[in-house]
Image 1: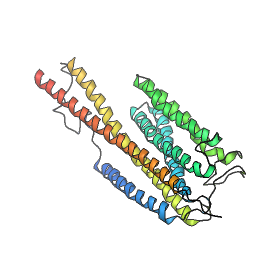
Image 2: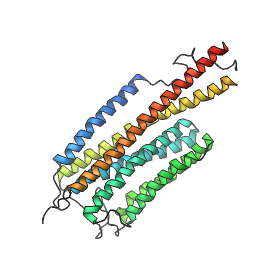
Image 3: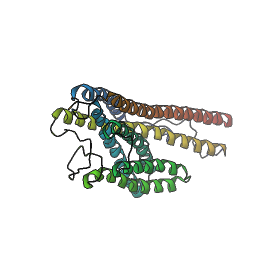
Length: 262
Length: 54
């Protein structure tokens, strides 16, 4: 046994690097946000199903847009955090930023999956197809694959510093696909995909627009849904980061145990 | 103009979204549980080794 190594069981939580301790207010804030997110989900679903009226042209299928658009917003928020974490890692070389980056991709990818599958479920009755070779749809698929590849490629690099450096640069560059998907129906006039929020070019090809600008109930429901998905994304990310902290603790324990054995 | 009856697609969309979100939450819960168990096991191992050396 290496005598220089401090033994595990005599260390207190305050000075033990192997123990995770958070300020109590932070844990309470996370708990409060988690409960608020669960309650907010009930409000959002009530508004989507009962408060917002049924679209005269699209019928009930239009209600899918409340989760389709807003899950993209939530995913974009966490992918933006990937960019911030990547820049912070490259500036500081602190592994905690890499942990935040991987956590944000692991949360953002399922949110973008929600966007993809709900878009497909909406397109079937409105466009009469589950999927079509449209610039917006293809861009979305490429974006999804880019972030799925981020997770796969990370697993292929063993050296932690090299992996974190690669992931930081990749995460920053991959965000270009998020911007591309957001911009494409706003600048091109040959996409089927309608622009729901914000200005766009006059697009005679777009099919499936609805009256978000003129119907205050639809606008309010979309606003609540957007807020909910963005908050839910951050809350899930916070929980995911805590899981990553436990994983880092396990690694430290393994290293300490190995040092003790030698 | 008649409003189309396509409620089954709305249900499909919301169910798929719910399943994906449940899978994400389940993944986080199970991963946290597994890591906590692993950490406890490693800590016990380290304590045993320290006791054996002492």
